[in-house]
Length: 63
Image (tube, rainbow, N blue to C red; front, side, top):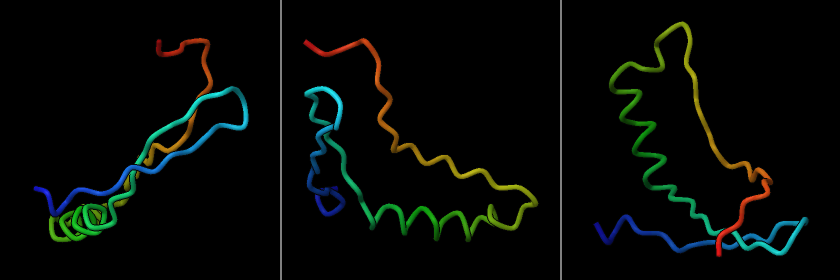
C-alpha cells in the first residue's frame, strides 16, 4: 500500500486565511480508467464522471 501513497499538496485560498490539503495520485487515476475500460463502463450511451476539486466557501471553520 505504501507504493500508492502520494505527497500532500497545499493550496491557499484567495479569500480568507485557509490552507487546503489535497493530493493527485496519477497511478490510481490511470488504474481506475483502465479498470473501467475493461468493465465496459465507457461503452454505455451515457457516462457521468464526477470530479470534485472545487473549494466552496461557507461560514463553517475548523477550530
